[in-house]
Image 1 (cartoon, helix red, strand yellow):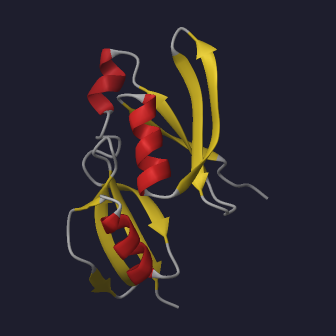
Image 2 (cartoon, rainbow, N blue to C red; image 1 turned 120 degrees about the horizontal axis):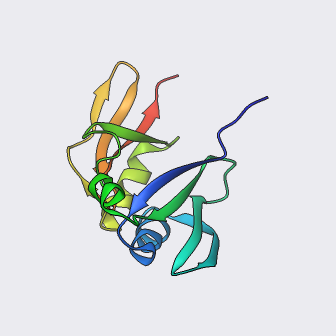
Length: 129
């Protein structure tokens, strides 16, 4: 069986990324290891779940800095599933997560777009059925 273990999200600064994912989204800080030259291996993941983890990578050159917040070309690039949309939407909004739209009902479920600390767009989504 194949699975996706981690994805990388570029951030301006590690601690800003950790603050957003841990304190606003409620993720666990799985690892924060110094790698030398101010580089760190920072992994966060949804709390208590068996889910794909996120590697927070600080942009280290002009090309990477140009893609911070624009990893999916302005589209929604990341999808966070929930089994209780109303509770999670309320919790995230209360934690200061910036939702770009009001929740909407689609044939596939309830969804609202939010942005992370770098400006990437995410869907908070509860799938139907």
